[in-house]
Length: 457
Image 1 (tube, rainbow, N blue to C red):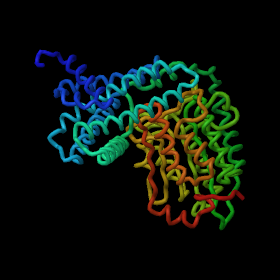
Image 2 (spheres, rainbow, N blue to C red):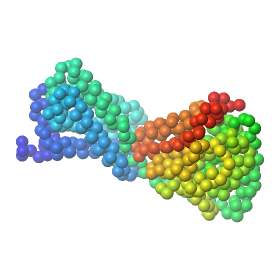
Image 3 (cartoon, rainbow, N blue to C red):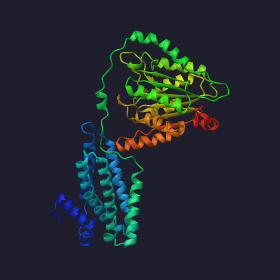
Image 4 (cartoon, one colour):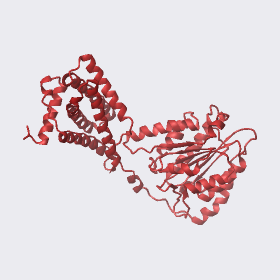
């Protein structure tokens, strides 16, 4: 046996695992124990999974180190589950044999499943076929563990069934603790490379038009009614990509309808198509518009919903761009300075951008809610120009708030929706964040008309 090469041992163990799946007792004792062979088999599993992901995203595919971390976590979970199985059977000395057989069996199950997935990929019913293949693979895995429990660990039928179900559930519970991604993910830079810059604007005309546009936007915002707690909305679309214009305008429409801000909402947008309709989303206009809305609000009782959507950078800066205009970028500390300079006490600030979690620390206080689309060191997704929404904007406004949830409830729902979408597309998790000021819950309990709106007057 020593003369058999590593590949030969691997093939031998694969045959042993197949025999075990078929219920042949005699072959189980022939498994060859080798750490190197287990490593080779694990590499085969990684290669099969990676091939599916690569073909899914090709040619817009890029390597992700998070996929290696994810697979390593799966391997650790596999070892822990195998340990739990032999402990259940009180046969800890058989751990290495059980792990070797299990890994060999998984290769026998998953490599054919991978091949079928590739063959069915372009079918009109690909999603149904792939789901069926996945279910069959899971069922075969349960059968494999049952065979290991019966033949290798010599458990009675009832205990073997229990061991198989317990091991699978235990393995599934462990793997659910970490987000799943592949080493090959979608390359979003392809979409940016395809972006075509708009026709240049007349810089002087745009700048001189701002005074009138700000006045027009201010006139559309009604003054607050004393003694009545009301919500105001201000949207800021910092980049000229159409997705940010679409997101801000649709979010405004949804909030107007679902949270009753009709007549108390305004937007600042950087887009060639709307340059003559809405004020620019510039740092100056943001400060000016907040001051004007402050004059309309009852600042001690009304609440401002400020929604900002743009590209974000690792140094926690929102991109503020429109064609050839020379506009200042919006840093997290600068935004905090602008907001804190106003007398608006109660604020819900939503930032949809990459690395937006870095805005929480400068903006947070006892009377503020800060919601961000990503962790301080993570990117968010969906900002291609042709999209209607970013992933988080779609989940938060177009799905959660649209369904009738409150602003805080919508965050919880949006986070789940984004996680599911990212997992489905094998993306590095963006991990949306929220900060809730200590005084917010006490105030919002008396402010159901705003925070948990069931009717729009």
